[in-house]
Length: 127
Image 1 (cartoon, one colour):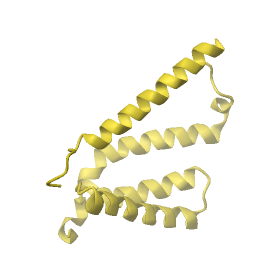
Image 2 (spheres, rainbow, N blue to C red; image 1 turned 90 degrees about the vertical axis):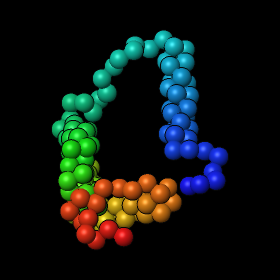
Image 3 (cartoon, rainbow, N blue to C red; image 1 turned 180 degrees about the vertical axis):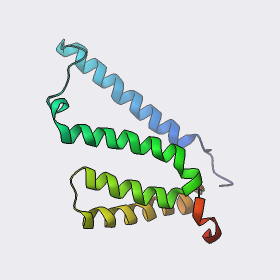
């Protein structure tokens, strides 16, 4: 927005600084404990957690390739509903979370941050 002292790179820059600080603390903590650098967690052998991780990664890839064609709204509702269901929620909760979270994310980006999201198949209803 005009008149602000920070630009579009401000928010990602703040997040990057926070992630770098957290990463540095994790490395420092690991070096102090002298633990192995790579150790598989216990859940790696169980089916449901692997499906959850795989579903989130596959969903992110799906969003990257489908969001422009289908639009953020349709893709967001579908992905969030499937993710909540895959991670153990009921269908009722999954659908409510998918719709409410997609609307909240849209309003956050569109109204607060003034960042347009792709409308895709709903382009004729864009406001």
